Amino acid sequence: MYVNGHVLRCPHCRGEDFERTRVTLDSSRSSFLGFDWSDEDVGAFTCLTYGRMEWFREPRVVKPDRSGKPADCKRCGILIAATDDACPNCGEPK
Image (cartoon, rainbow, N blue to C red; front, side, top):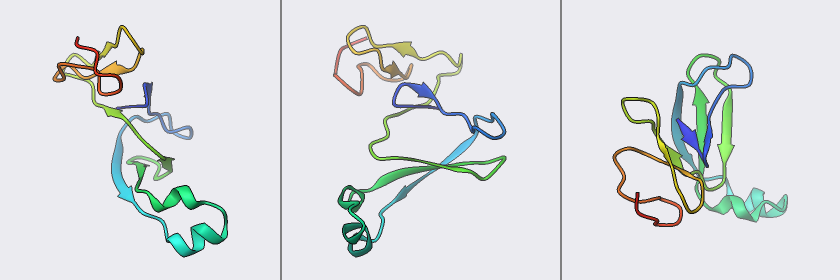
């Protein structure tokens, strides 16, 4: 799985198998602590081997095609899934 153009790897076990969850943090507590951005949904990814969670504010997820090799966008460099006709970031056609 690629998140924001990079392979998502657990820093503890080096595994690449993650489960994705959408999370919204408590807005009253987040506002008090200065984390107003957390009122939005964030992406939480849990390593299926180790259990460590990785959090991303605006995750753009690309799953590799069967060959495991997504293509790079020629305009912005983000990885494009084989099933997509255009870049999910900038809209550039393949």
